[in-house]
Image (cartoon, rainbow, N blue to C red; front, side, top):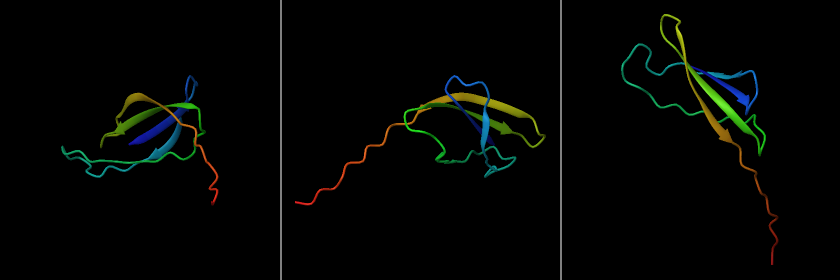
Length: 79
């Protein structure tokens, strides 16, 4: 699999990760997790997942849209 990302409304996708199949050539699926840490709070991103079969044929899926929430850090004030 290849996972691509672009900023919401952007023109070009960039490759985030190439993920090898857990079950190449098998009918059963597998579960995958990837944490994209190269994002900015408050921005919206579009992700495109591309599967690559054993013959090299690429099929895109998506896009999926995600908005990164803002992180709020409050100081710890001892009493």
